[in-house]
Length: 183
Image (cartoon, rainbow, N blue to C red; front, side):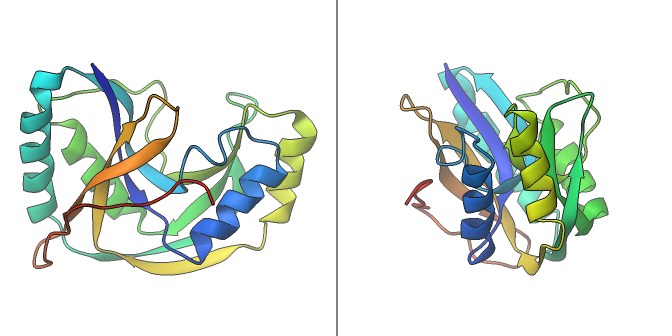
């Protein structure tokens, strides 16, 4: 069994800013989870399902086009869930369509909550850390082009790492994605 996830990576220089904000909030996952917008949350899959999943994700990527994403300001899921996030202000419908396609494949996952694209910056930390994250990034804004998504694997060291990038229609595929979650 392997635990995987699928997401849009937040590019630099914003990824480093969001990771640092997560550290300041006291979130122990700051160096284990790269800043991202989730398409499929952590999901356990059998080793035999890897090829079918990769084929499905490649097919999903060919059905979608690059789009612009804007991240702006903060939000929270409190009191339902102890999470503070940076909000997706532009690109929501593209996120929703791609997320539905990703989860329609050979590896399915029932969601605990309705899909809401966002970038987590504090999760299950003391209230003062949640409040600090919420106020520190209230004025945050980032605009970038999303050209594909990544398949992540959860390592035995508890770090999430991208293992394959899937480019959208008309873009060349990248192989051997190598990104460090903590520096």
